[in-house]
Length: 386
Image (cartoon, rainbow, N blue to C red; front, side, top):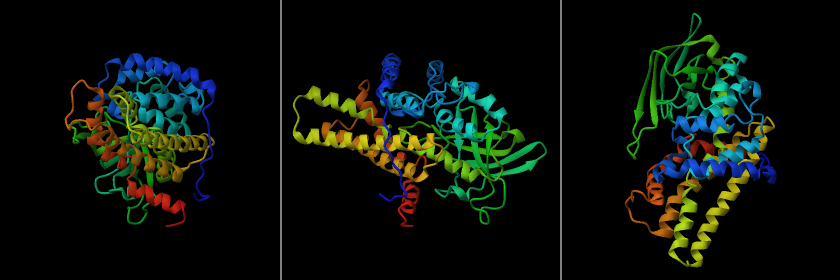
């Protein structure tokens, strides 16, 4: 690996085991009625009551200062909680983006008034955030976005469209990236700014987009002269590209980028055990999948260490997301190879429901959060090949 990539080892200490067991006990009770279909949604599953319960236990905003509703715990403690939640397929969507991205962004760049207002609500599981980045006409080239923020008295007027906006139809707020400077053809990576947007504002229309499962957690959001007050500008005007790029390191390196299909693995092992002795090839294939998970976890933990130290490891995060998506997308095929299940979803069978959901959705894993082509371009630059 090129010296431009940094994956310094970081371990989770044994003293955090009581926390892990505490989370497992909570999830064992909470998950008793979850179907395989619900487990498959995991961090896109939207359940406000569950998020409030997680917030009551101090598991949202764990690393944030107490003055903003946080709990001043370590990044490793938060990692333990997130791992266990994803391993169980918990419905994290109502607080996920606020805890993972929007809150940390406001801590770094938000005004004091923004921190005081929004962070305690996120930490309690009472405020849901979505992310407004992608646009219909920009494709994977985010910097070419055309949605515009125009100065008016007392604030800004937003016009344009965002697409693939997860849970926008359910969320309270969006942090959106808009062009506040010159045209994209002239200032592609300049003149972009981020805004805190109340999703109840006049002029916002949210149109759900159905996927192959028949559900619609993606959305197209249209802004028609939406007013945003001056005090809802995040960070500095014109610095939006650098701010959003740093924010993506939080998004692309988290355990959700290699654990979205993880609940399939223990269910598959249980099914194989119930079926009796297996050929050595079965153990080998399971071992390969487990080895991939271990490596991805080590890489993700290393990035956590860099983020905690104040760095922005965007290249490393891009690599973890790309490799993690490959692992996730192979999981349904591994299950079919080892168990040869029927090509229909068996209602009430957790493994069958989960497999059915993931077969439909894993193709999207290499699109959300940055397409595979974009990520490999970033990796190529890190290797000096581009």
